[in-house]
Length: 440
Image 1 (cartoon, rainbow, N blue to C red):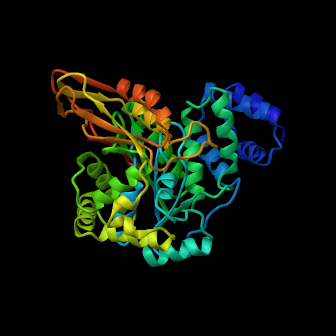
Image 2 (cartoon, rainbow, N blue to C red):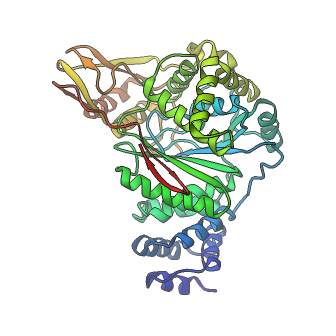
Image 3 (tube, helix red, strand yellow):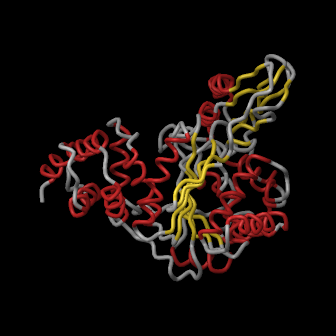
């Protein structure tokens, strides 16, 4: 088998066989296929697309290009959740404890953030002492005893994807639906969960800008999961504005703790309960409506907050933060952004908000950039809120005052004020399952 022949076949729009896609994925992982042929293949896929069968075969081959995690020693149905990336998206810190409190084990491997979106691992690293790199035996033990553990993704999970993603980033082939779907699902399948709930974001701060694009991606990923024997579903959720009031690692952990402790944060609470209900449904806990009630009870009773406390303690972190979030780091340099007119907050563009947080030190422009865990933005107003001229809209936090001007410029560009109360974009758009699309 030659890569040249596979390339020519896809260039001409023909369908590739599973063994040809396996040859391609294996060559990407072990370096036996040169970058110029891998790049040519990515462009051929970008231009000609792939069938559902091809996409499923490529995903399976990419998943098997490295380590396959076996979660079978952990009893019960293991359900994973994956977000396609958002701003202020601390849902794992809330949904994981809720689901675990309902008796469904959550053994999750997450990644760090890059660009305007944050990563769950970075948020957890803001907790003093928290260990994200654990031996497999210890990881399994915590899930068995606590019901919940979140660790860093292994370096050898889907190595073919790691190589291909890097090439996609520099060859203008990022925006290919089958390549996006195979990238996400190969890592989820390799991570060993029995079922997968996908949180597919749409809007200004998401890669899929329209609900239609998000549904198309979700249908592709759900089809892949079902094709390889994993029960899979997706929720299409809004990312036109940041989720919750906090953007930045320690700030988001503190907000998650406050919500689990009973504070009303309506948009964040609604999305988290919908995701938790979806995970519980996939785990066989009943119909969606019943699972929603289970999730609400776990949240209201305090059992979910206790699960978070137990996980933090088990992974070496200072669990006192669940009672006193002020123990989390907070950057010392602070500045308020104030309203420049009376009116209402009409828009708060999520991508600009995420970029502003990154510029304050809370995120990475490049993978090797350090993180300031106490940096970020705390919003005092959200879209739809009335404001008066001079009133604080947000507080910016950083450890380096030189970072403030550029970050403030991005945040100011993100916020639009108007004289009339705006009509807000939905939080929840649709549910996608193997049976079709249910629009809300």
